[in-house]
Length: 590
Image 1: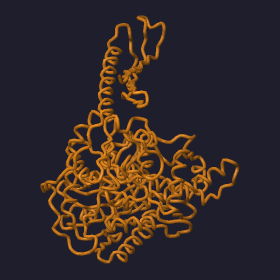
Image 2 (image 1 turned 30 degrees about the vertical axis):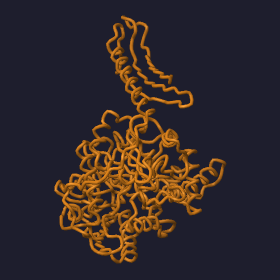
Image 3 (image 1 turned 180 degrees about the vertical axis):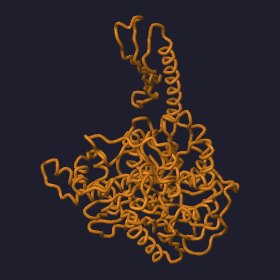
Image 4 (image 1 turned 120 degrees about the vertical axis):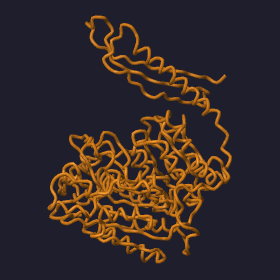
């Protein structure tokens, strides 16, 4: 992690060719860490999670097998902000939703849930508010209230990354977001096809470790992460074929041979490298941020200036004819999973720097999912060496090894990677104690503070891109696959779908009132835009309608707001006025 007392972080800025986050001294990182403020409610829940871990509890309540969807449950979470797009997306996902209902609703209908309409995630809501609306508080997941496996459908603008991190503390959470409806349909088809035909891949794991010349970060990840993980899988799972790409082989062409060559049928891909970063708003940022820098880059001493795409592998490099059906991948790389709106590490005057026009998912994992991959476990924001190395170079790969062991033994992906959530809970609990002592005048152990601060933020930011309930389509107990990898266009077999739970009359009423409130809001907006004598100085801004239900009083209330700035007299002598309109529609049960 350190070289000449500097701490190195993965990530190269393609716009400049420099490190995306320059190597920093222990003193500088200690100052950043001391400016961190942890949310009190989050801390309490993380401490509870850590306590559960030390007393042998898992994320679901006692007596529930997290590997069995009929016991653990499965749900899909849509964003209220996307309500106009949701019907088409839900229709595209129908094969996957029906398939999951057939599995999760076998014992109880309510263990399959669609959080949609008024039940969906609402703007500006946090995790606890969302769970409270569904009669669930902190603590182990109760599948009869909120299923353990949750698939978020939407971009991180509609459902923020922070909410995903928070939910992931107790639930197995994944996310998908595509730019068009057809890609949702392709992904849904591919997941069901893979599970219907499983097992069809030979147990094969490929390890891709870049180690660029004179680059500390990639040499460490190749030597201290990729090599130990490869050796562990080879020893723990002797029936798995292991393919190790040496640094010299870890080129753009080498990664292309794994992802685009039909002859390569890797089931598990593990890659570590720099993830590409770009300046905020750069033309290629949304398409190429998080792409994997390959061995083609000659290192920071030999190459100066912007990084050309011939040095890195992006979503654009995944062939439209690639068949990745059944693959699960792990990327250790900055922005390999996605990018937040603001820098989550660099603080200046108590503020975070904006690093992208909007938060977004990395394009490489999304392209892989479009071509048949089931899921990718990767990092949002920067990746730090504290993920796999601890004080003075101590091996710290147990979370990785335990997760891969569980995954290779047939566990659903979201459950297999619970070890990362437990590590986050443990580190957050310890970091909280340190920061509290500093608030009361304590002297920091800078090295301990920096390690726990970077490791905490790093552990928090690993996410599943894809359905968290997917599994590797490989033989679990040895033996050969029952058939070859199917083509992506293979038709799905018919299957029985558990009957959908009867529509909740209360939710139906809420949906109707929401639509009514939205229509009134739309008419009010038209009035503001066309009213005589109102000289607007800006657009009319609206917030999405929201509906609350008080079951005790039998009252529903729909609210919506509009705001604009305008002059209200012909001459404008009276100056500008802020105009705010609040619409309130109340329905009382007779």
